[in-house]
Image 1 (tube, rainbow, N blue to C red):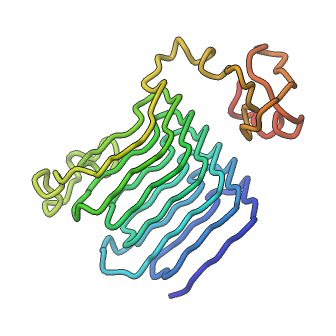
Image 2 (tube, rainbow, N blue to C red; image 1 turned 120 degrees about the horizontal axis):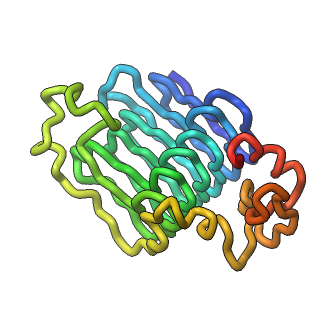
Length: 231
């Protein structure tokens, strides 16, 4: 058992940016950037697949981008994600595989390839998704499912049946737009009037990619970091 507190950190180019394993107690991440990791930016999991744990996860005022999945949360007793930017991840922005008591509030979730927020196994009715900006995804803004992940229909344990998991997530006052975009519009989707950096999303980027002449970067370092994603 143990606790972890990260503040003003930049975690990048790892397998996982942050991995929280079994028996963690208090995990708090504030004011940090977690980017360009090969798998999850943040992966919190109790390998015993039980809610009988004391894990409390808090993420505030942080940027999570250019990972495989932004945040993947499994069997976490308490979750609070507030005032963060989660963007340009290659799968989902926020993937809560087993929600318990959770608050996702006041975040900007955008440009994730599969979609914005995915929640499954809402067994206790205490999952709140509120006052978020969810936009510019090729997939949906928000989806609730009884499946832990794609392709696991036949692997569902008997105790996790559809009736038990039919309690809806509380979704309130979110602003969603430009989701479920077709692949034919990705070129337009990546270019906006604010000209954000394609890697860090900083506004006012001026270094245009010479290969596609569409996306822009604020610094050559960002362009180098995005080279394996932007081909």
